[in-house]
Image (cartoon, rainbow, N blue to C red; front, side):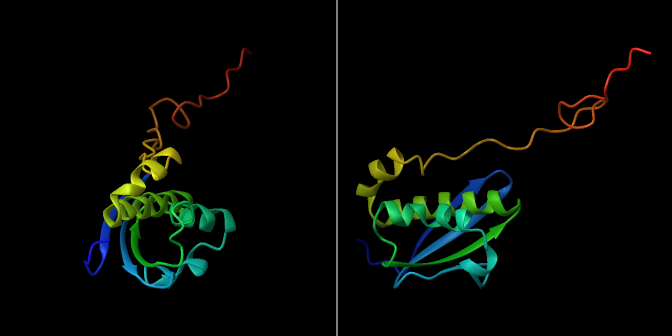
Length: 131
């Protein structure tokens, strides 16, 4: 392990961008100055965020401070997860194959498709009436 003060990485998902700093510590995660449980009340999103720490068995070894902007709950949770996984590689390069095998390093490139003219949404058209 390196002797830097913290390990930094950026995670992205949909329109959300998360800047993650991992500090050696006991494990609380602070997002935009608030505790993780306060900002993400849904259990599934919290579990997704801490997944990289669970997989690498480092849940109680790091504090994380996160600044996240853009997107909604799901996109922000995915961006934080991606950022934490990338920061863990800064900590120890040997974790890369483990994180890669769980799909935590791949940036999910799916974004919302733009609306097209003449349609209601990206692909939905008005209902056709014969008479």
